[in-house]
Amino acid sequence: MNHAWWKKAVFYEIYVPSFKDGNGDGVGDFSGITSKLDYLKELGIDGLWLTPFYPSPKVDNGYDISDYFGIDPSYGTMEEFESFLIEAHKRGIRVIADLVLNHTSSEHQWFKESRSSRDNPKRDWYIWKDQPNNWESFFSGPAWEFDEATDQYYYHAFAKEQVYLNWANPELRQVMFNVMRFWLEKGVDGFRLDVINFLKVQDSFPNNPYDHDKKEQIHLHDKDQEGITSVIREISEVIHQYPDKFIVGEVGSEEIDILKNYLGTGKLDVAFNFNIGSIGTFDVEQLYSELLATEEAYGLDQNATLFFSSHDMPRFISRFGGDNERAKLFAALMLTAKGVPFIYQGDVIGMQDWLPATLDAMRDVQGKLVYEKSMNDGLPREEAFKKAVEGCRDKSRTPMQWDSSLYAGFSESEPWITIPSNSVTVNVENQMNDPDSMLSFYHSLLKLRKHHRSLQSGEYEILQKQDDMIFFTRSAGQERVLVALNFSSEDKTIDVQTDRYALLLSNKRTSLINGNRLEVMPNETMILLKSEEKINSGEVHVS
Ligand code: NOJ
Image (spheres, rainbow, N blue to C red):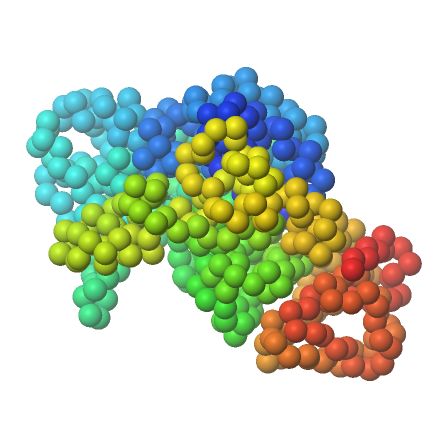
């Protein structure tokens, strides 16, 4: 397992409805993705994470599956999926599928049967109670819905159309294992397991406590429950029966020790670390301390993940002030520090957040539920809308901006969600041949990473912060690389005998000045190679 492919891979998240529309209906699809595989290959991507593409009423854009064995017609046919997979593999690109094991759509046949009567054989596949407890949905509002037909409540940790499965039921578990086998046999290279640490809830359903000022519920009994790791072991066993498969878990937890507990042989390969990934505002101190905490907790045993954006959060470039030069530092960190990187579509061209101006333009169920709750709480309409915009995840879900045409080269017709007006200037076509563009910077970083083993799998020798500059060295075998990231607005220096290093990459200069101090400019990324190795290194120069 030490040489597992995923340890060196760079993943790229494709938000399926918004990547590329191949049939002109305004929704991204498999023929569209296939048409962009050469672009992804050229960029230097090793793996794709596809958000759910199974049939779904799309209340939560596919995270509400109504059939685990098919392809949603708006994304194409099974044949189109299969040919996409073949084409990706031909280019050496692996594909991992997003799997939602915790809940199904309320439109799923299983739930229709389950809700039809209390003694239906599938009744126990879901969680039914005579009385609800106080658990709140992770989206907003109560987590229980009353179902008149059988006079009981069912549990849903997210929207009421996302009905929770009862993993304590052995029959259900077997059915879900077959779902995994089905896709593994189709040839997918692994899974991203949605909110996997919420899979099991506390059997006795005690009420959740609230924080000090009683404002927020603490999700004590509806995640990270005893017994969860043994279920994960069963899942992992099914998946790892197939050679070379990979599992990344979405583990919503702020505790690094809890995260770590989900990892290792027989469990998840990696888990998303939101402590680093979802840092809300630009804060180098916090970033550094999270990197350090992860390194201390994981060390040689586990592999971290590195990402700063996803379809669930505002794009990092917008969170950190909308500055391209600063965003490049985060890109460099993601692709050179220790961890498995997950790039989010659009970040490579510096796409920014989009904010819906009206409730009608809002697409995300979470935003709508926040609005509903705020109105129920008696907030004035404007306030409620403001809260809804804050909570809504449409910000980062707008279509990929491929070119400056009317629908940004994403589609021939009006897309399902608004195209931001800056697509006229911020797009792949414009950046492709501009050596200073964000896209070229990512391209150079990805190329460099491919040439230098220490950037893929090297251990840290140093990991330090000096004011607002983070720098580290990573080594593998004879190779040692130094990375300095100056997040400050002032020049910084490090004690380095510069004549012993070769410049591999900088976004601010083309050569090094000899001396015993290395000067790093504001917003500069510098990547240096210890010179003994430079001869065989396959050096990359960028301007
Ligand atoms: C996490 C997914 O990333 C998010 O988009 C979804 O709404 C929830 N899980 C519920 O499935």
